[in-house]
Amino acid sequence: MVLLSGFDEGSVTETGLTAFVDIKSGDIFFDAAAGGVPGIVALEYMAQTVACFAGVSAAREHRAPQVGLVLGSRKLDIRMPFFKLGVRYLISSKLLGTDEAFASFEASVTAPDGSLA
Image 1 (tube, one colour):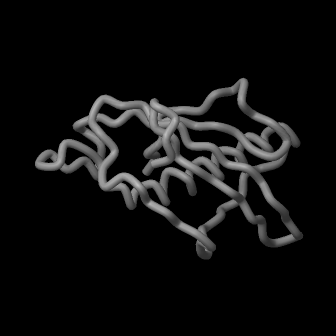
Image 2 (cartoon, helix red, strand yellow; image 1 turned 90 degrees about the vertical axis):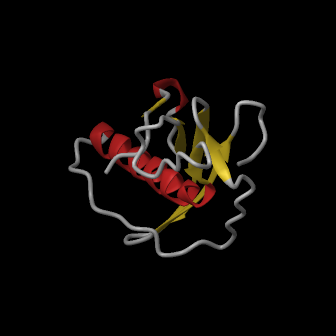
């Protein structure tokens, strides 16, 4: 299940990228009564942005992408109860460090006014 709408190819660096999600009424987690997607879904947006970065990095190195998963979060601060219908949010990820089996990333979701979601 892909929740992201896409990513900015110009944002790709050796340590991260910026993806985006356009909130639509047909989204799997859309709550019509609230008029948006619950804020907790930000964790999945961030995880998919990291996966997008991993896939782009693998493709650049002519490797097959590998399966990954979120093992935890050191600090998760959800500031928006809902992502609003019709709004594009930016999701940024940055690689902090890696070893042979694990990688650590910093990620954030930004609203159009620049505030952190």
